[in-house]
Each structure stands twice: as C-alpha cells, then as structure tokens.
Image 1 (cartoon, one colour):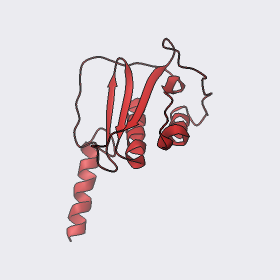
Image 2 (tube, rainbow, N blue to C red):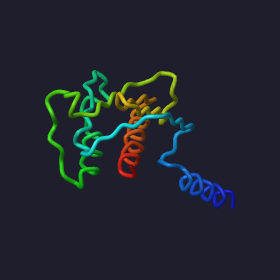
Image 3 (spheres, rainbow, N blue to C red):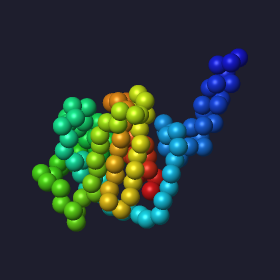
Image 4 (tube, helix red, strand yellow):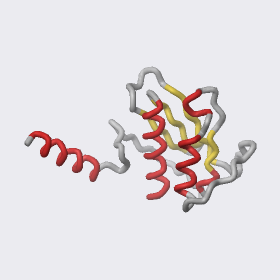
Length: 130
C-alpha cells in the first residue's frame, strides 16, 4: 500500500515539474537565450573525463536534431554557437545538478556522471518545449 502512494506521489511530482528529473529548486531570471538549430550548441572543451568523450551530449543533440547527427565544429564561434560549459561541483550530491541558462550561454554543474546526464536531459526538454 505504501508503494502505491509513493508511486502516485512520484507521478504527481513528475506531472507538475517542467523537466524530469526535476531539480530540487528552480530559479528563473529575466532575459532570453535563443538559437534555432540544436547543432549550434557548442560544448566547451573540458579535461574532466566524465565529459571529454561527449557521448551523451552528442546523443542529446542527435535526438533534438530529428535523429540526424550534428557535424562537430572545430572551434567555438561566438556569433554562430551557444556556449555550454560543464564542470563537477564538489558540494553537489550524487545525481544532482545545477543548470544555469542566461544570455551568455548554458552552464551545468554536476555532482557525478548521473547528475551530468540528468542536466542534459532536462536541457533537452527545455529546448524541445521552447
């Protein structure tokens, strides 16, 4: 019986959240970040082994681009690309993340690889839903 109530509560939370998995808190500010093509999202290079390979990021881009792979640009072009930076944050718990979107670009702070993946999934939902 307890499982039934827990499952119903989880479904209710998922239905009311703007993204899934939902963040613990959401903060919204003024301003917009607009880009037309998901392939214009440029993941800035990182020495972090969690994100260097880019597997999950490329998977998200392909899904957003109607299942077509994006050509990986060689360098960041400010007038063409939207900058995405990602880095671990030691104060975040495993599976948690912070997603910041503003006029300068997108920043992901994550507690571990799962947090990074959840942040990318949430970002893809935001992009897809506008």
